[in-house]
Length: 398
Ligand SMILES: *Cc1c(COP(=O)(O)O)cnc(C)c1O
Image 1: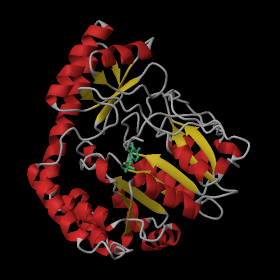
Image 2 (image 1 turned 90 degrees about the vertical axis):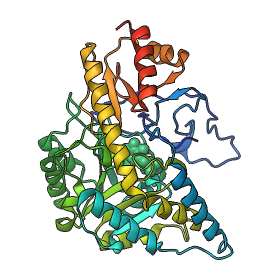
Image 3 (image 1 turned 90 degrees about the horizontal axis):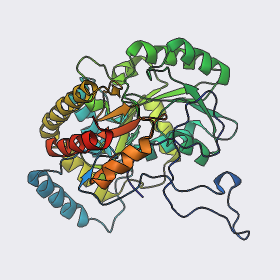
Image 4 (image 1 turned 180 degrees about the vertical axis):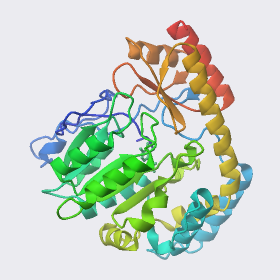
């Protein structure tokens, strides 16, 4: 299954007033549950999540960093793995203390926010971090809440932890109205609120005032409520857009999730992490499986983190590429959602599937995702972006 992100699926889960994006219709094995298998009823008939993994010349569908690690990074990762291999007869550091310290140092450099290593947590992708959060703070009789359209994995974490799922709504322009957010939280009294910022699939970053409104409403939920700001695309935010990391010091019920899969260009390594109060992190330690982060994973992540300065320069180039793509699409009369991420949601197309297919026929794979009529393209190398533009001009007759 792909290291992916993306489309929303209804998944048989209750939603309210949500914008339900398209179904991923990839033909995959379905959990049909022959009568001899006691499949959980909520899993019956479901397909595994994932974007189509198609071998194409230009893959701009899962928001990866288009640049492979440099030869220097490859050499350092290989050396670190060799070193780790010498100790593979032993279990790894269960608390991955060195990695947590490295992640804290990285966040200080990236966002200017100083955190203690004990405030960091990591797992096999931020997807697993999120699952830990739901295992610790969700569960039967509890509710997780987000605002659609948003990341379609959220309802799956809820389902897998037997947490009820509620999708509130974003506005037409994909922003989140603080008053709507407050009212929705007051109505449903969730124990977990998930906010993607920048949001997937729209690219929308939330202003600090909105996050503060959510934190305030969450603090009033009887029994408590954890607010998770998913900053998987945080490094791509435009200049002047703050990170929710800045709010950690005053909000012990806030967790800010990050990943090495996107800006860091390490999707294949599966490393995600979060920053939060020590108390919150210590709760996650209770639900994680023992030794969940392998010695190899820890070594790879640390070796890559040592090159973060080089990476940040590359992120700057991708941001510029994104901004230029937004301008180009708008100049051709298309609607484009403002993006603080490394992808762009654009439209509107009467038959978006035909456009998606036309691009694929020309070797360019993008993502059919988001509200009806919209398509999402990841920012690639300049050459990949050119290929995308050329194909789109042909297919959409721009
Ligand atoms: C890609 C993505 C993630 C990161 O997933 P990993 O498991 O870290 O690869 C998390 N949240 C959103 C919204 C994403 O799009």
